[in-house]
Length: 185
View: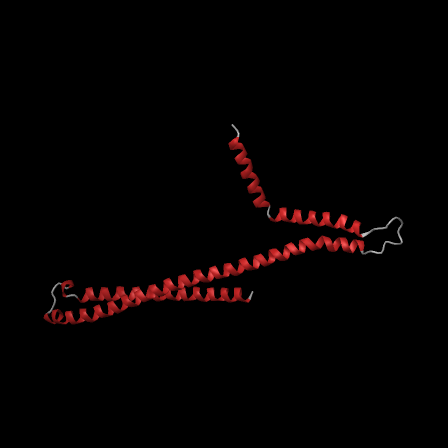
C-alpha cells in the first residue's frame, strides 16, 4: 500500500516537472525567436539607407547573436531530452503502480476465495453448535453435518465463481454457440 502511495506522489512530482519543462521550452523558443528577429532587424540589408557604421558593426553583432542562438538551441535540445526522460519515467512509474495493483488484486482474490469457502462452513458449524437436545427428534451426527455442509459450501462457491466470472463464462458460451452455428450445414 505504501509503495502505491509513494508511486502516486512520484507521478504527481513527475507531472509537475513535465509542466515546468514545457514552460522552460516555451521561454527558450521565445528567446530564440527574439534573437532571430533582432538579427534580422540589425542586418544592413533590412535598412533603406544603411550607414557605414551599421555595415561595419553588423558582422560582430551577428556573430554574438548567432552564439546566443546556438546556446539557446543547445538548451532547447537539452530540454527536449529531459522531456523524453520524464515521459519514460512517468511510463515506468505507471507500469510499476499497475504491477502493485495486480499483486493486490491477486491477494484479494485469494482472500475472497478463502472467505467464500469457509463462510458456509462457519454458518453450518454455528447451526449445528446450537443446543438442540431439548427439542424432540434432533439427534444430529457428524454425518448430518457433512451432508449439509459440503453441498452448501459447494453451492456458495459455485454461485460466487459464476458471479465473479460471469462475463468470461458468457463470452465462452457465446463463442461456443457461434462455433456450433458455423459448423452446421
